[in-house]
Length: 114
Length: 113
Image (cartoon, rainbow over all chains, first blue to last red; front, top):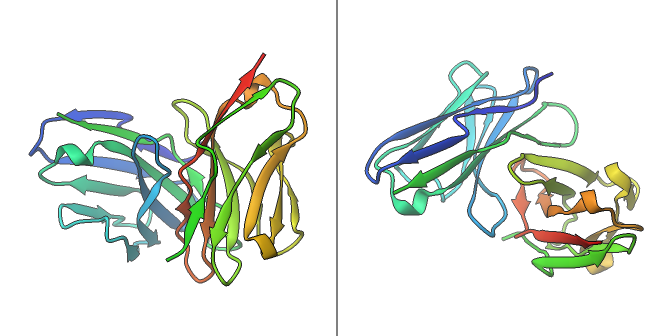
């Protein structure tokens, strides 16, 4: 078990560009989550998948954000027309279907929008 | 809306001293509760969790937390701090019926030699 992986670990982009992040969960985990963490704050929930179905989205997830999990395995988070306020650490987590939802977190993707 | 409050964004303790990190939640129905630790440039790692079983929960690295419904608290303690405990600690709740976490703002623990 290699844990949750995220790619890239760091991304620098110019305002207005589109970016896409990838998350590979622990292989047997059905649930996948995206969070955003800004400096000095705790992670904030963005969205959640159970298998390929996106079951919950936060109000934080504006129209510029879209997440997919096409085959119930890896997930992508895309941000269109990035803004400086999008600069943050984007965290992915996964959890199994059974039991209490202990989430396993990846190392995150740090986005800097210049 | 449910919220989590962590009192003290920075806590300093001497090596060997008691560690106490505070967490209070707002909910009329006790949620599931978690403590995570985050080391620099690493992902969040689960320390312990409360899931409606024993109110005193033991976790990894000598940490434990006590769920107190009357005080809506879930404070994290460790009897004797070690230099390796220096990190940021997050309390999180998962309201029953949902799967998302609501995190506190975190407490950065500094351990003094």
